[in-house]
Every structure is written in C-alpha cells, then in structure tokens.
Length: 171
Image 1 (cartoon, rainbow, N blue to C red):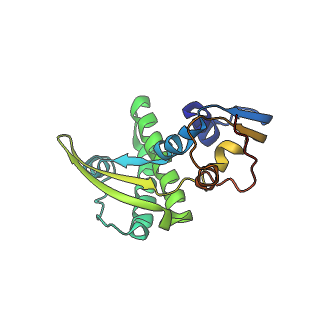
Image 2 (cartoon, rainbow, N blue to C red):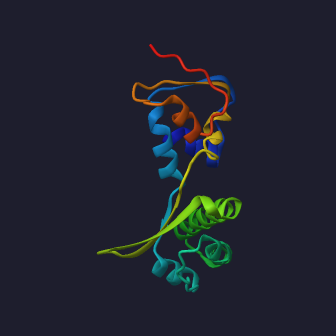
Image 3 (cartoon, rainbow, N blue to C red):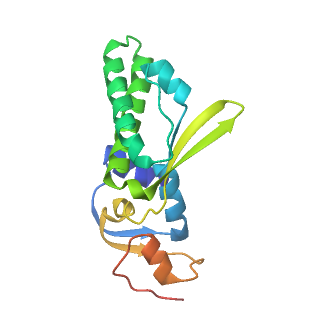
C-alpha cells in the first residue's frame, strides 16, 4: 500500500486498471493515516527558513503559517547551490504545500500534536478520519476487491474508508 499511495500522490506512473485487488485491506486506514501524517521540527524550520512558527492547537491558525513556510522554502531553493541541499529543500517545500492543501480543504479533520523527545520538539499533524482520502487508492481502478480476514463490522469498515456502494461476501 505504501508504494501504491506514494505513486498515486506524487509520481502517478501506475496505469488505471479495471480491477484493483487489495489483500489485508484492514490495514488501508492505518497506512493512509501514516502516509498523510506530517511531522517537523519547528527549530529546523526556523533554521532553514528564518520563520518562527507560532504554536496553536487551532488548525485554522496553522493554515497561513504552513503556507508561509512553503513559500520560504520555495524562495530558499533558488539560493541554494548544493544539489543535495536543493533536493532536500524541494522535498520540504512539497511537504508543506501538501500539508497546506490538506489543512485548507478540511481543517476540522486534522489534529495538531506537540511532541517532546530527546531530539527536541516536533509538531505533528494527523487526519482524524481518512475516508475522504481513500479515494486516492480506489481511483486507480473501475472496481476494487478488498480482502481481509479481520473485519468485524463491514458497514463501519466501509464508512471509515469512504465506501458508500459495496457488496460483502463472507467465506
């Protein structure tokens, strides 16, 4: 799933197909959650962009700040001579552009977490529900066959993945 999601989000090399068969489908929600989660160190952001983030638990407060960080990384890319550093700055720029889009599209679906570790402070943004993002996986095929042996309630499983029209077969 990680490869599929990464390809669909960033590269889009995989062709559209008639059928997508997904085994161990009970993992889709967890993997989508992990793929969409974004973490960063505010001190690294400051060091690289000269922008001091203002901590807030309100996601709406973050939308403008995340856009500003993305803009500063974009400007910084133009001044960097090292190809390695430039590539790292481009990755961070795209990370913040993506985060900005996700937060702006549905701020109520995101939470902010501040973590303190031996390496310092990290800010993490996580989606609450992945149902609106699962279409990313399902859009690659006309039909999707999800297989799993660990779904307790198929209607809740379908709802959590944003699936409205489905058939369930128990074997």
